[in-house]
Length: 72
Image 1 (tube, rainbow, N blue to C red):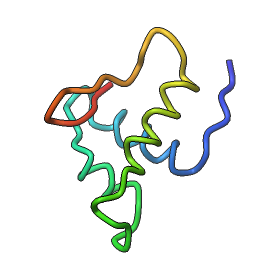
Image 2: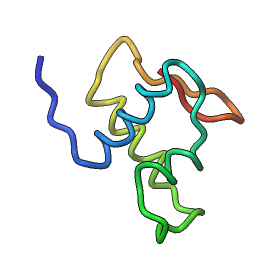
Image 3: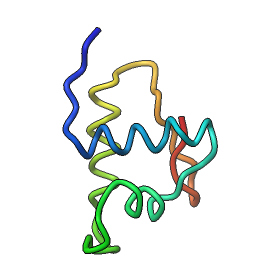
Image 4: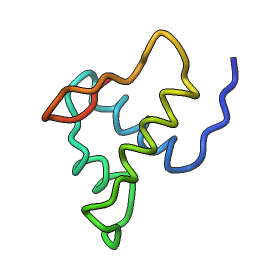
C-alpha cells in the first residue's frame, strides 16, 4: 500500500520512527521537523499527527502518551 505524505508529515513520521518506541514530545517534534522560526505555541504538531493517523489508518500506529508526547 502506498501513502502520499506531505514533507512535514514525512518528517514527523521519520522522527517518531527513529525514536524506536521512545516518547517524543511535541516540542521535540517541532524542533526536529520544523525550523527555528516556528511559533512554539502553534498547534501544527497536533494537526500533523492527526492527519498522519488518518492516512496511516487502523490499527493506530502513532500513540499519544498523555502529558508527554507521541510514540510509535
